Image (cartoon, rainbow, N blue to C red; front, top):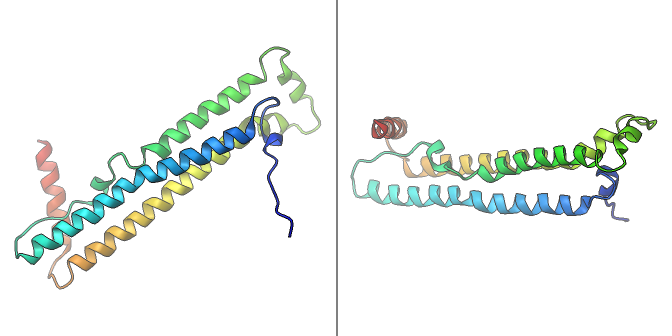
Length: 173
């Protein structure tokens, strides 16, 4: 079976390297995903320590899920911001020199101009949002699995989270 390959040159301004833009998006997605793994490691370490404390019979609290994330997903937000700037740069590239933006607007396919300026940034933003949401859901599932595992047999395990959240807010004052 013949493998299909997307011709990214059709979706980028003439003269720009669309394959480079797509590779850059994919590399930064991988790096952002690796950066976000810090949150997962923090969750696993915290629950390992929590299990040890609860096994000794001491009382403690569980940090709410949102507190583990910290800057874990900043990479995905940064990708989105940079790709918005790439879209602006793509539009600006048609206005340099011979002003081909006038020609692009007169083509029979009136969306050709916008498609060439926005396709790669929209692909990258969509991939970034989907990857970030998928990782967020996976980390959340791991958090709840470990929470249920550690607090099995407790009368009111939710009390650990609520009191932990109150304690964190008190620490701010």
